[in-house]
Amino acid sequence: MGSFEVSGLSKSFRTGPQILTDLTFRYEGAGAVGYLGPNGAGKTTTLKLLVGLLHPSAGHAYLNGIDPMEDRKGALWDVGALIETPEPYPTLNVHEALDAVGRARGLSRDSIDSEIDRCNTLLDLPALGQRVGWLSKGQRQRVSLAAALMGDPSVLLLDEPTSGLDPAERVLVRRLLNQLKRDHLVFMSSHQMFEVTEVCDEVVFLHHGRILLKDRVDRVAGRIRSRQVDVEFERPVSSQMLAPLEPFSSERVPVSDTRWRVTFDGSDETRVKLLGLCQGIAPVVQFANTSLVLEEAYLELIPQSEDAS
Amino acid sequence: MEVQAAAASPGGVGTVARREISDFEQWQIATRHQLENYFRTNRFYGLLAFVVLIAGLTLAFEVAAGVAAVQVEQLYRSSEYLSNYLVNTGLFVVLAAAFFGGDALSVDFSTGAGYYMLVLPVRRPVLLAGRYTAATLVTLVVVGVYYVFGAVGAVYFFGAPNVPWLVLVESFGVAAVFTLAALSVAFCVSAFVRTPAAGVLITVLALYVGFTTLQATIELAGYEPWFSLSYAGGAMAAILDTDFVHLQTVPLGEDQYYTIWSATVLEGLEIMAGYIAVFLPLSAYLYQRKESTG
Image (cartoon, rainbow over all chains, first blue to last red; front, side, top):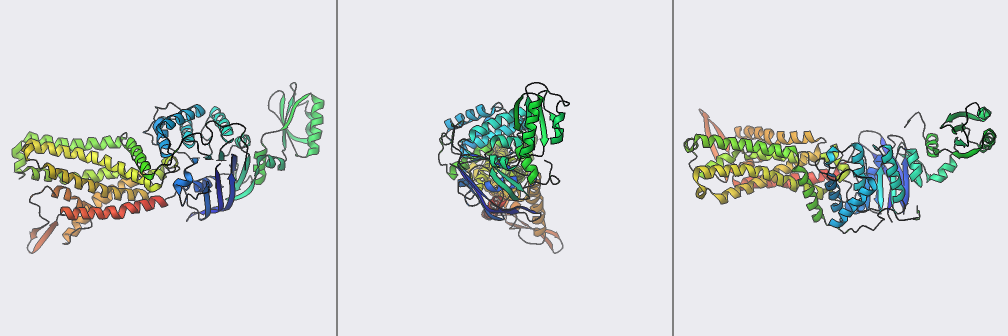
């Protein structure tokens, strides 16, 4: 099983502020780790340091126990990486772009073809004979993701993997990541809280180059009391009918005729009262936290004035 | 972190057969990858068309003018004809080196190409070696076409038996070493600058304009421009010149002389080797150290 680790990792450039300060974490085995933080927090910098695209100012990064600064080939041998916006040579076609990756990773001719077929099935790649230069942003992103998967490496480092994809493609990639994390180690940065909630088992919050929080997603969810519940009634409910909730909720937003998003102070007492009141209005089919727990954690951890993304 | 697998993922870790791959094999892969790219670029076909146009027009004018016109230029022997023709080879080598080497490394840091290639398990010097080899081969194709036109002209005017084929091949060998030297400089520039256009421009300016101007100035001062790559490039033509003179003194006026130096073949090769020995390792060092900050 794969692993990745950063130990006392710091990065600064000759001109400019300190990007990362004394980062330390290690993950091993299978699963998915989400890497969250506002723009400029240092997420992409961390990923670049892990694959040796940047040199640490202090500390070390290790992939499967190997420092890419000392042995790039060994460190990256069992790692697939999608960082920033990769661009294969635009003159090559999709098959040739993936073929070069397969050969560099030591795949045989037959294995390369079967791997390209596998990636094609998983990611619905554009026509293999099409030139990369003619692809749309989303198509190119899927080709780059396929390149990261070629040879089935045990560690996947993904920098905003669904960036540039349309909603259908995002669903496709999320499903794929959920499958891959069963026996791969996935480290993904993202601004999509829903995506991280859906895919990741663990989460690391980064801010100004320092780790703010590092824990399991379910523990973070437990720690951050959700201030929103989605209430689904058996039949359509109007805003007038929800008037009894007003003393206990600050906002009630309709999601559909039968579904409302109710904002409150997050306490268990109020939650119990709201449930009772809702049941008095109409039969309740579902009463659950919204899937935005990580977003709430993000907003609680990171001052909103500094970043709205 | 350890999450137990509920079911195997598509493919599953370890289900794809991979073998250890040597740096030598990866060098071959990188060379082929780069060649595939070069042979589909407009710059390759543009440069080839330029060479064909210049060499073709030169030959066409000579053929139209006839043998007498060639002899007016005092090119009585095929070796003299070829030597005169190959004087311009350096220009095409420099142009090709700039076009194919000037952005060979900077492309990784100015576009997303680096995020595709540099995350692969390949050592950077191996990638550099592959690109260097590909750039050399593609430059030699361009230069080879120029040589072919020269050979056709020599055969037309002097007959195939009178053409010094072996020396012509040796001259092409010197051109190959000159190509390696020019590409070493181009790769070094490419590893240093950030944008591909700057790499191409600086390489052309340095190798063609810069060295030529400096060479003339140094010669005016009465010194041998032994440090100049363009001076060394003269060896490509000098090898065919049966009346080769290393040092010529041209009177400019009363008690004033202008000395013209021409590199001998050995001297030219030594200078070229010096450039390769200095600039190629420097390129590798800079490329290895360069960070993807964009």
